[in-house]
Length: 176
Image 1 (cartoon, helix red, strand yellow):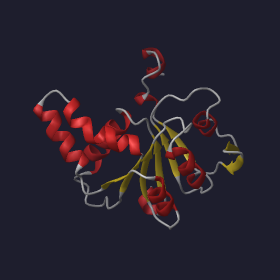
Image 2 (tube, one colour; image 1 turned 90 degrees about the vertical axis):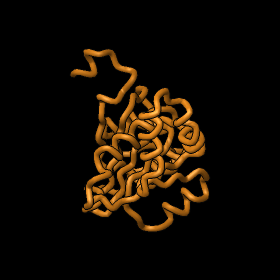
Image 3 (cartoon, one colour; image 1 turned 60 degrees about the vertical axis):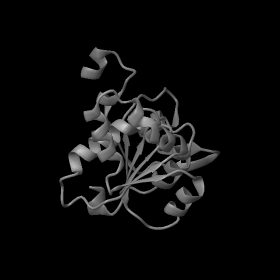
Image 4 (cartoon, one colour; image 1 turned 30 degrees about the vertical axis):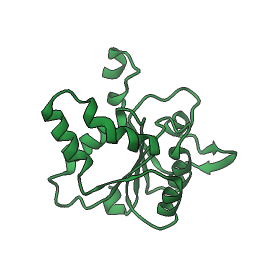
C-alpha cells in the first residue's frame, strides 16, 4: 500500500529484540519480491548499537548467518543521529521507517510520529504493547488529535495493530 501510495509505513518498535524481529520478518516476506523496491530506514542510535551486537547474542551459526543477511540487506539503512532523521523527513520520500520507542514515549519515534500522523496515506504499524494513555494508545484508539510535545497533531494516518507481536498480553488475550 505504501509503495503504491508513495507514502510512509512507520513502525514504532523497541530497540532491543522487537526491531530485530521486525527487520527479520520484513526480510523473510519481501527479500524475494522483485516489486519491493523500497528503503527500510532504522532510526535510532540505541537500535543501531544493539543491532551491531545482535549477532554475538545469537546462539547458533544458522541464526548468526540469518541476521547477517537481514542486517546487510540492501534495503536496510541505519540512521543513528537525529540530524539525519530530520534531513530524511525534510524531503518527500516513501518507505518503511522503524524507530524507537515502541510506545512513542521517547526517542526518534516522537519526532517521526509528528511527521507521519497528519497524512492520511501514511500507515503506523504497531507491533507491541502500549500503556493506557500513551501516545501509541491514543493513536490506536483513533483519537482525532494527538498532543505531542505540546502540539496538537491531526491523527489522519491509518493505524494497524499487530497484537500477536505483543510480549505483554496473556495467551488468551493474544488469541482474541
